[in-house]
Each structure stands twice: as C-alpha cells, then as structure tokens.
Image (cartoon, rainbow, N blue to C red; front, top):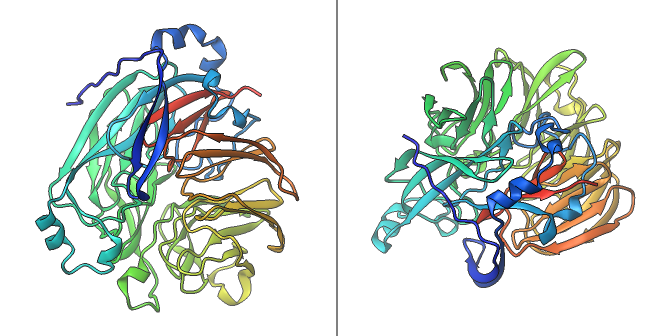
Length: 472
C-alpha cells in the first residue's frame, strides 16, 4: 500500500547549509528554503492553470524528446521568491525529472542506508573502477506523486527494497531515469536493472512489474519512451547490451534485440545510458537508440534494425540525441566527446556515407542538447556553453559559465535555461552571439531537468520540487 506523507508549509524564509553529496564533499552550500502554505497558493491560482498551454510533458525531454516548450515562458522567473507558487520537499535522493498530465506530477526517489566499512570493502573487492564507485547498505525505491496545482503530496509508494545494491558512481542516484505517463492515468517508473513498475497514477497501486536485468555498473540512467502501445527501453550494461519493447498493457516483452558486436574488450567501455528518440523519416518511424560505438535505428514495432553507424569508441553515452533539419545530432560520450551529425536515411551500415560532420569543442557527456532549428546549443559537464551550426557543425560561439552540469537545457520561445549542480540558473537568448538574460543563485543542488506546465515551470532540486509562475 502507498504510504502517505505530508509536509507542514510555513511562511518563513530560512537559510541553512548542507554538503553537496557525492559532488564536492566537504563544500558547504547555503540553501534558500522558500515554503508557502498550500492554502494561500490555491487562492493565488487563476483558471489558466487548469487549461494547459503546453502539451503535457509526459516523458524525459518532453513529448517529442527535444526539450522544447510549445510557447514562450519567462524562464528568468526561476529563483525569484515572488514567483514561487509552491515548494514541496521530496524525501530521499533522485535525479529523475518530473513528468505530468497537467494535473499531477510524478517522479522517483530512493532512500539509501549507508554501507558499513566492512560492507563497502566487500562490495568493491572485485569491482572494476572501484575507486570511482560508492556502495549503499540497502536502497528503497520510491515513486512519488504531487498535486500540480497546490504542491500537496498525493502519495509515496515504496516499490522495492534492494538489500545488496550494486556499486554506483557518487554523482549518480538509484533513481535517475525519468518516469513516463501513459494512457488511462497510468505512470511507468523505471529503475534500470532494478526493475520497471506501472502504477495507477491516482492511487499508486501496482498494475504490472517487469525486470530487464542488466548490470548498470555505475547506476541506472536511461529513461523509457513510448511508441503506440509499447515501452522502449535501452539496456546497455557491462554484462550485456540490448534494447527491448514492453507491452504497455501488461509489461510483457514484445521484442528484444542484442546490440551489434563492439571493438572494446573492457566491459566498462560497452555500457551506455542514452534515452531512445522516436522520429519520422520520409513517412517511416525510426527509434534512434544510441549505444557505445554504434548509433542504431530500429523499427519500433518489431525491433528490426533499419541502419547503423559506427561513430568511434565512445561509451557511457547519456545525452539524448536530437533530430534537427534532417540530421541526428548526438554526443559520442566518454572519453573524448564529439558532436556528430548523421543522416538517418538509408539502410544497413551507413558509416561510410551518412556521417556528415563532427565537432569536438565543448561537447557534453551528461546534459542533453537543444536546438532552435538552425543552431544546436550545449553545455559541457564542466560549464562551457557552446553554439554550433546545425548544417555543418561550425562553432559559432562559446562562453565559460563555470560550475558542473548534468541537467539538460530547456528552450522556450527564444530563451534557454541551464542549471548547475551548485544551483546557479542561467537564462540566455538564442542566436549567433551569446546574450545572457539572467543569472540566479537558487542555492540548491540541481541534477534534474526543468519542465513546463501551462504557463509555469516545474523545477526539481535535491531537496524539493518547485512551481514557478513563468508568464512572459
């Protein structure tokens, strides 16, 4: 049964410090806590909130996976106290982005029990790259629902407790994949190799479960996407690499396809964490699913391969690809990331013919890309913001922002917002020159990506979820 939890709202604004867990151990950051009573928030709302101006943000990066809102928003509202409609604390740790049907918000989280020194030593004894990994004693996986209008917690569902969790990178969480809203009020919550749950969005009751077991090595990352009555899932671990489609009706496996062979013999260089992108090419649907070494297009109904391109020796790919002006744009991942453009027409191995250009400067390994149709914008993990021409990859400008980034850029109208681990939120204008619009210190760790709802913005931090009034 779902366990209900409630938070008492106050009108007090306070400051406190906490350690930036897993990112900068020992560095204290001030955390601005803005709490508004739910009743007052309800009074402040007007009828526009019930009639969404945006298509519902039902999956990672939005309805088409591109990270673009349907209309203009005031992105510089983020961080302004007077723009906060509500703030709701979220228990546990999770870097998944929220999703919504316009009425409710859903996300994942995890409650971690710290491992003892003996447990840690035993768990990491025979693990590759153990110096880059951390261990938990146990992990409780949570699904969380919040009322979108008031911020009132609706339910929290404990899905499973993992008594012997695999090691994880300290920068990751056990709840990083973003949920997916499907038909009839159902929501899918995915936790990588730990399992997938379909819940009733109103009650939190389980409808079906499925587990595609795979060793994620440093924790889960890839989010599921929908195509018709199927759930597309990328499973690129260090033990095996495959893609699969689950039935939305009951979670059964509709198809499952192994990835092509790879040159890398080290299993760590065979893993990836990329979310599928479903596109239409000349009237035919393709599921673009990036993995280590290969960019591959599948028929989403059958799993049959349409084409593949060998882009090099990249791995641990996380940024979601874009489909812009007839080209697939993507990051090759670690260790030397490149921005690559591929023509998605053709069949078979198109490596020699369809890779159109490459660009090596400022390419991210975690944040996804965003484009206004002619320019692709990207923020590197270490805070270098760049703009490149979609047509040929020419670097138009770059600007060092500083900080560390995992959250993906978000485009609304002619404005783009980025947010750092340290809680700095920057809004800049699209165009062939860098033009900063605003810079705000939110003072809370940000790893999840923002989403629009009606004419507002939803922002998830390490500690809470916010709704900001973002009317232009």
